[in-house]
Image (cartoon, rainbow, N blue to C red; front, side, top):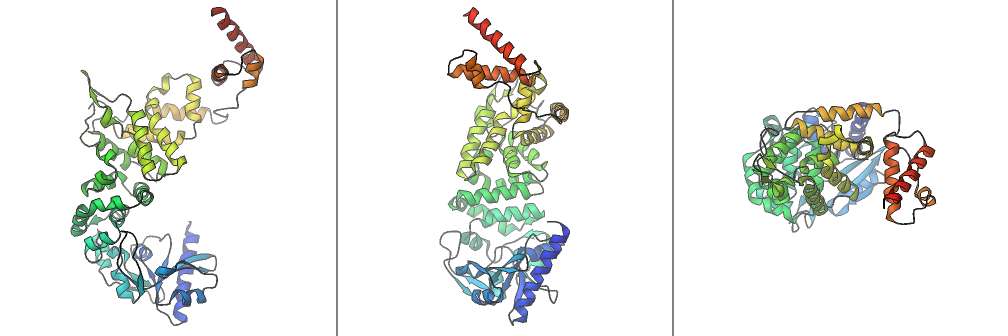
Length: 447
């Protein structure tokens, strides 16, 4: 959202509070928007907490949708926006490590005490410009600390995903974890295996794409025992030494951390490609006389990444793009020696932007040589005014008309014809067909 849209959403959220208060109810902004507002950041959305019941909220905001009726949550339309309005509540017992079995409606202080972290448990009245802080959230913001509300072990037992959320808030806000909170995560880390793969994947993706230094976030997960529990394949990269001439930064894990830290606003596909691009190295490491080698780690890495992403319930599109980028990343070492046809296929791939940035980060996090990256950038500029992968001049029907029977040979001849076209060896379709016919005749004579 631009500044105008953000200001409009803030004003709408204030008017929603005014409507509730005018009707005689208590109402405040609540949670993350209060934290961001207090820190001088722009909230992405606004949540409201009130003593009005869901039915009363719905009556005040016609067209409301009770998205979490059992938990007192209503999505209220106001003007051209929707604001989430929740009744102050107390959570009863948790049995699935995710949600309370039931809730009871209560007051602001009790509502604050059931929330996850102190920095997310404050309220703000935009009408009177006053904060309500029952748990010390303002002090923790000043100290740049992520601290659980109450006993950390209790909060993590209630909702196991809070351990990953603690890492995300610390990494995104550039805060530290309060010592007791960090200690409790180490003790409770195994509980995260009870969370659905999809929820874990979503939270990990947010950590990788929203953190200021995603590599440091992965190191934090490792120190808290979360990495070895959730991503043992990534944890296995620790201590896997690499040739110093190519990797002065150290082992595979340090290299990966360094590459992740260099990312700027990455997509999910790029972030996971960077995290897992060398995940095949631990199982392919072999000490040769001259140096350590990792033959086939790209192929092995793509297979391992595929299993990880399946476990985390990634979409097929994301999985294919990430695995393709990992499988292909070593090809970038040979780009200046590639035939024109192969180079054009590389640049024309739908994942090329991801692969190119992965290569740049891979180089910067190791030897620092960007010659191949620059070569590809230059070639891409040269091709800016033409389709990198134009429609093929020669079709399967053309090849059958030249006498090739239906079968795998047709594909092979189509490949040859398209390679010749991409390499610019002929000016048009007719020249290509004449060359193709002569090639077929030559092969027949040689059989």
